[in-house]
Length: 234
Image (cartoon, rainbow, N blue to C red; front, side):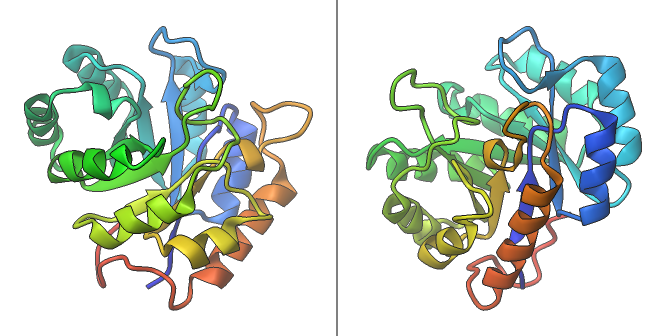
């Protein structure tokens, strides 16, 4: 079974069409919830993006920690997955209820890998998740996700080996390091945003970077994944 590929940072219909043609497994979109971040889109743009994504599974990301706001985002974005980027701030019983409310949609939860406390956090979140996503906290601002920074992959490897649910590795992954990341952590999937974006405009995708990221991830994946055989990701 190959390693799942996931791309974030799709903010235009043109880029959605480009990515759709290259066939990653997942494409993540970020609906504007009133939280300041550079990769959000408004509702009309979201609709245009979704019309272009015919051959991939859509992941809707929510930056909220409020149940009602999360459910509104889920209602607004038809998707196979809902990704909670701030799951560490949400009580486990709330996460469990959300997962039940959202079924059959699946729940992806971010685990910031700051230090060894990430192992305990992953263990706490896993019972509420269909997948975990390991991401980087910016070393200066503390912001988690879309930082372009990698984290300690040895910790990620420990989480992957101990997890009962599939684990997606994120955090500063791009064409130049995705093969090494897969070799060293053996994740079920890999995610890229910043390092597959254009150098002159991070809200737009670089076609060559996207192509190389997917190509190299797929080439490195053979025999490297710990994903459960036969698990349905789409």
